[in-house]
Image (tube, rainbow, N blue to C red; front, side):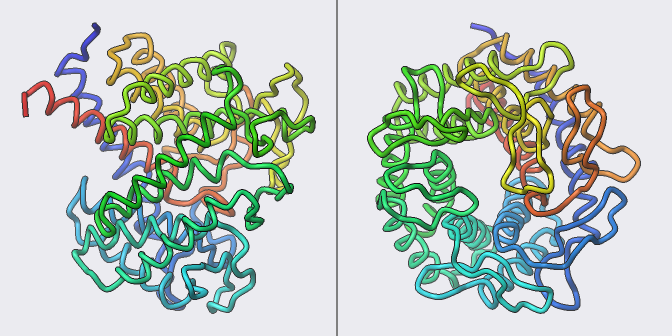
Length: 406
């Protein structure tokens, strides 16, 4: 079995840490705090100029999580914990809709523009508050964390729950993203809630992913009927490589922790198949979207202004692929996946990273030229890219400890 040499491991740790703390998070550290109104500003152009001041609670939950784990696990600079607390305070004081439910979008002053329209908001709030509780040692949010978990569990286990934004709810159908995001978010609540109930929901989500959304083990679809049958529509034929990579490294991490080697193997095999299907052998990087019928053309993102094309390169897709490839390389001892990880990271650093102003661009054309140079917006914040760098650092550190016998 291939083994990563210690010198290579340490060199990659240093490289990833530099990109995380200086190349990416330095951009957000200086800009994201809204000192006038509380919470975060998350929409910036390439140079860091503010594009708008609306408060998306998805992004507040995500950034609260990111700042918390950065402080807890990577860099004990108190600024990260202060930033995490700003997100936590805003979530609890402004974002909470009560009874375990969370608002989606607020204006600059904190007035609700869109209320409880998305289960994903609940998931990211749970994730953020749980990580902040761990980093700060505070127990003040235990009750709200528990109620959010209980409400989320009730909704996720209900096949007919219509609170699906940004996906469209189709009666009798299910969307992969609900279970993929849920199992990861819930995993971060374990230090607060204990293992039993979160692990039961995590296993439920794993079972849904493999029983409903896979197609003979070859693909994971985004939309299926509740009993796992295909849906003959554009969305029904959609295969989202970023979601598959994200889902599978989540699944592998939790299955490994819980002692399910068969599920680990399924996840690793799916990572390999998805990479082979989505890797751009001409220009590099990972393609934005695939179609199980072999059609190309154009995929219309839910953020209609972006109108993303199937062959473009999107920041978060590359981020999830990096986590998945490194998971596969280190856990299964696969040299091929290690080389793929190195190649993809080199490509991302060359084309996505902006050395002049910091952070990564949002969207590249297929050939790697920047098309959307914004550093933050409706979906992009201090989350996918730094989370990938953080996750890869933890994977390398775990492998290093194994080599030391600790």
